[in-house]
Length: 150
Image (cartoon, rainbow, N blue to C red; front, side, top):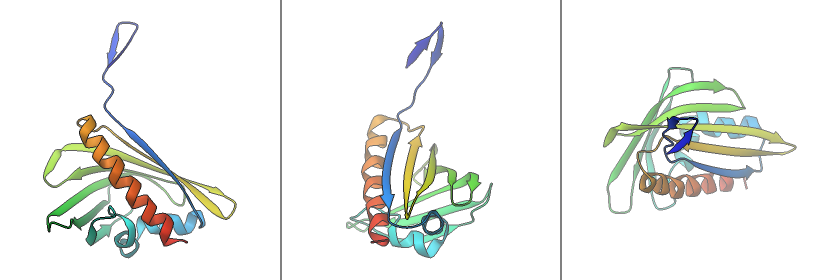
């Protein structure tokens, strides 16, 4: 919590993860917006992706279902709030098990020659433990995305 001039601002935990991808912004954007490609990378290293869907338009929905090594399924979904092709995606994020804990993800793609820099900001977490778990998940998922283009 921060205080400025008598106003109280509640700062929820957030995270930022960056990666450089050896691909054009168009190809990286496609990896974020096509279900078949999402299934190849949008899950932590120790899980598999069972299902992905993406209706990439403002108000459209996405869904990703993952299975961990112990057989437990993890179902995340959300709504696209902002879509700028090859540049930016903003969407809500919630787990089926805790839909009331909706957070927000912003993905910015910046072309840099033959590579693309991704900056992912995930904010409005319920608590720091949830943020920390998502940091691990996003870090390993984005590592998979890097590998997809190697």
